[in-house]
Image 1 (cartoon, helix red, strand yellow):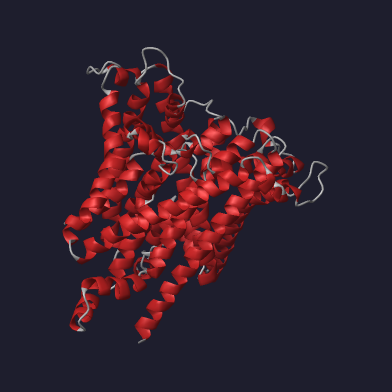
Image 2 (cartoon, rainbow over the protein chains, first blue to last red):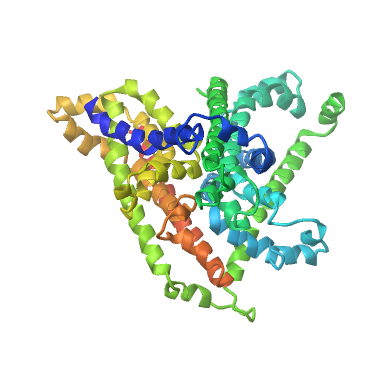
Length: 275
Length: 274
């Protein structure tokens, strides 16, 4: 047990202590008295807007790439070519981690007003910028998040798809089920927990993302993580000195709930898909 | 709706249906491939163009000469080194020890490995800046402390899976019956068998340190991604070139993971055959 002590002490000091301090500070006035004031600031004004925007962006940036990623993963699972599967799996692993400033700059080069992909599209007669598209608003953020969320979905849902047994399909066909009936009555119910878990993971990833949105909009859009960033950079209003900690607590509550459901969904999905 | 589709399945012959499915699958994958590659191609084109629109390696070639680049690059490199040392000294022995001697601790480790997902980097850095003592904050590599923490989810999963795939108790007993001490068994039996899990963990840690922006952006000394973001004000071509190079670096690291993975696969096949 002694051998495990350094690790647990380390986690305690580097992870739990900072988090604990945030929770305490969120419930304190500047002079150290207990208060709900900081938390109550979250229910109105720009902070409320930040959470609403964050939830909206995260919902869109988890459901849309969730559906697309599922379709891609399904198309991929039926390609019985080990090299193609390997390449796509590893490409997905890189792209799923490819957020942040680099992605923002490459997207500006591609989909910016003078970007190359924008030019191709306008050569085809459809310049997205003339139809309300922008990289620098919420829809733009969802659009750019999809670029790493779809590969993430492919990555996490592929093992579940591989767990579908061909015998189930044969049994269903033997009983007269078509493809649609098979998916509605067998495939999707078995996969549902795994898909839900994957989408929850995507939601958490979008909800905590900071770098891409910050690099793209230089902190001008009100998302919960961006508001914390502004707070850390010293943009504080008098009387709201601890609001950054309160936003952090709010984010952690939402992520905690997401993670708990993610773990439950994963356990449930293993019931059918393992062995 | 259901009946229409079901009778449709009877009307269309099986081979026709399969053919149609193959076409739509191929189409989906081609569209996806285009979606993924188009921005990368655009980024590469933009990076390899001079202001007149001609092809040139100029933007790439001048990156090392840009003010602050080499400082940021070497700072990120040293940070990666410190982080890797932290992971190898602190995290890896703990996971191995838990598997060997204290399996009861494994659920606790699993929960800890999930915590960095609950606590987003922006929150973690906020708390860290508040709680860390000054002497730690002026240590230039204090970011590595947090990088060890946020790499826990994938380091733990990779090593845990690697250890579960080994038949640990048989290996230990075999080693013991040959007279080896536990340290010898870990060093000469377990670690060599974990090479691919270790290599892929280290590669992912390095990739993380070179690309992490959220936490690094609040520090005094710029890391590589922070430098790229700051530099974006002065020259778009060079910035895009640097961003593309970062991506190429990540691909190279991932190729390492892939090779390590294939190594594990071959080893398992060999073992299965034997």
